Image (cartoon, rainbow, N blue to C red; front, top):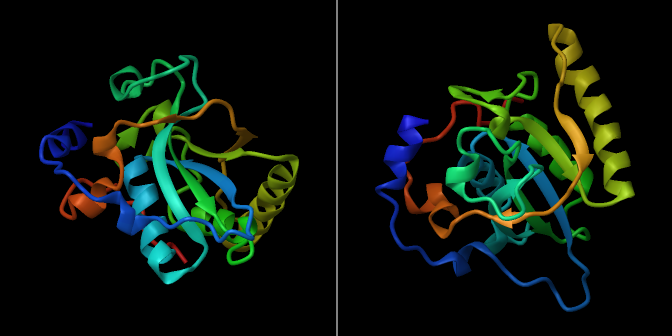
Length: 198
């Protein structure tokens, strides 16, 4: 937590436009919402592997707060875990290019879904692993992919996925200095679990 607070002091202005693109006129975009520890790293790894400029399906992202008790939380409200919010990333994507199932599997590849309220050195309910589904179809896909990933990647090691799969509630964008933080500050704090695990 202290490393993250120090890193915030060194953030600088940044042009978000190069990390987003509008959906094609004939496509209805969808939204995927994931929490897997510090939202800086979750957003960063998705955009490194699905950069909008390369037309891989992700159109834009935002980091923010979801799943808690306050209607309009701030970072100060949630950073000690008192509001039950999770730090999360909201991904707008083109389902004709990348499927929701692929994004769910990638989410599992890029953090540790076997720890409760913890990623690396970050501890607290705000760092939980969670998939916030935005439709019944997303819920079904998330459950199916979770079962497949559990069987293939975690059963052989005797570990269990503890990721919550829950309906998305109200989303609140995090403050601007959090958005695309690790692109603006490449040497900023990043959780050690945000990498490709397979």
